[in-house]
Amino acid sequence: MPTYIVMLGPPGVGKGTQAKVLASQLELPHISSGDIFRENLKDGTEMGKLAQTYMSKGELVPDDVTIAMIRERFERPDCKNGAILDGFPRTPAQAVALDKMLAVFGGKVNMVPFIMAPDEVLIERLTGRWTCRASGHIFHEKFNQPRQAGKCDIDGSELYQREDDKVETVVKRIQVYLQQTTPLIEFYKSQGTLVEINGAQPIDEVSAQLLSFLNK
Ligand code: AMP
Image (cartoon, rainbow, N blue to C red; front, side, top):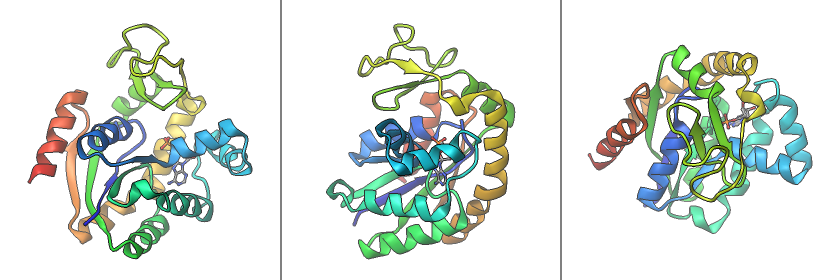
């Protein structure tokens, strides 16, 4: 049976960082909707340009565009054993679409780690975050410094500050999360897949908590 894990939580809580840990432990692909939009933007595709008009304002890209993009990603063979989803679904319509997509592969969402942290922690993490240009590896100017300033420890690529990690956009992204994504907490609770994780702890402790849930 394939294993599909949905990382749920506000922007900046560490979904991407923890998704990478799970992906490497479980040898599953890490699918980040935000990374796919940013890759499209870098490649200058029409979808990338459209997504950017929403991303730069901290708003969500329309459901139809996002769902179609994820469906296409699932068609690649590396997803046949499952995936770690990071940033998708973000609305109830996306969650329903995901269940339908996975049913086609005979799969379902197996576990939903819901990572939480207070708003001031999120804002500090996002505004101090540095992202690797090549593969989206994540560092922080205080909490997870790269060995060499401005360079990714993993692939040596340049680190940059995402445009939507500016404080005004960060506040908007947290509001959008509260309005559009928090209904998914009840959705997955009612499916019995939600596990709550304290994301205000250091990275290694969050990973340890996550892996202990996975082993249960
Ligand atoms: P992230 O990298 O997950 O923080 O996403 C960055 C931005 O990409 C978001 O603020 C949205 O504009 C867009 N985005 C990513 N995932 C989704 C999604 N599932 N639905 C709609 N928009 C998304």
